[in-house]
Image: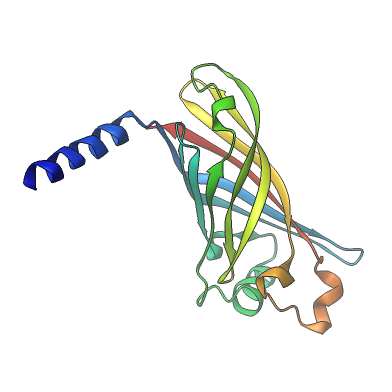
Length: 181
């Protein structure tokens, strides 16, 4: 029995050693809300991400409080009233690049891919499919995508008094450089 466990552990270790990981702790994620009354934009340069170039598995995580706004009052309302960032401190997208084989990590270039996974915001997890571009350059892979998120889908309540100032769909942009590890 001990031999089986040791062999299994070595096989798992060997498989993991063959996998090529790309990582960052300084990924850039922005969101933009546009209405006739007001535009709201915030930037987060502290997203963590890991992508496995062999399996396509990946995780993007970010602290909600790391979003920076032009106006301090917007940032305060975002964290306290809408996102409740003390209660729901992070957002996460965990999934898979479904067509990872189409990306040649040994050759510089831009590769259009599709991702499927679970997007968790404000404590609510939803299945999503998001197209992206993976741009390989040297020992890094840049992940770019743009998609929309509906606050209502994640049970984010917008008070009636400011309802006209916040879009029904928020545009999210990811532009993160992941380095080979």
